[in-house]
Image (cartoon, rainbow, N blue to C red):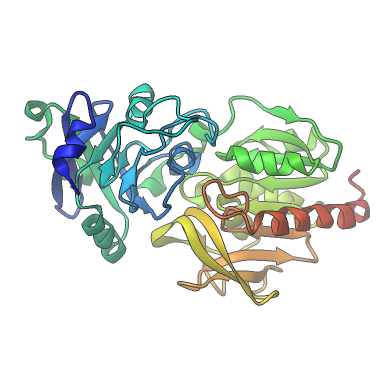
Length: 381
């Protein structure tokens, strides 16, 4: 780490201060937009893909710290954005580079954060912070970026402690689409509940011909019925799944009538709707290298993940759900299905971006087969 070189990368050098609710306070170099933000601090282990991660709506309400030290080295093109904006409240990294050389780069990471009005913090010991989060669990945090005389004396620890727990916040209204829309396809018709969907999920579905009706997170059953769907799909998104009241009711209504699918938050919502329970993980799964064991195929996939909650193992008993995949690191539930009810959901992101794509075809092809094989029986065409 060369702090002199690092600081010289930023045109107007600012300082940045990070405070954690456990009393930790560190100072580094600020970049991006000056400001003071608070939220839940999580870390991601991806080695590349900051464009995708920073535009993932599932990070709404959080501040994102990258464990891989160098960020910004290939700039920002916009080609890999997963939404129209940056969702984490702030970005934290060990090193930041202001002079990208990639041929697709249209602006620096610094300029992107400025344009988004979001602060960045670098030049701190992210390994120490990561180990602290792994030991103590995710914590509320505050980041202040600006001129030294403006931020150095701020009590960022107390600011962090005064923030509400993320589980008490309704985040879905912020990340869902402003109005319903249709992505035309020649294949089976899907009602997609947008709880903060990543673009690549829609691309993966559209590439396989699905006719997609994207509905808002708080859509009622009557709104879903209006599109006469052949399947219901519940997307990824931020926050506590127990707060997704309408989506839970929708799954309850359609389970057993038409196929029901889910990814990430959608996996948790389906679990709750069927009578299982969820819990908050100690520090979540965020990154592109999470090993998932498929209990049926007896193989391990390396997956892309971004979630803070998971289904309680064993709580699926009596619900009609079957656990199909587990995390090889900590044994948490990664996949569920019900052949009787035509349900399939995974905790990871088969569409990835960023991350490995080895689960994309297995998931979406299985989904396609389930619809073609089961829908006519349900009489929903």
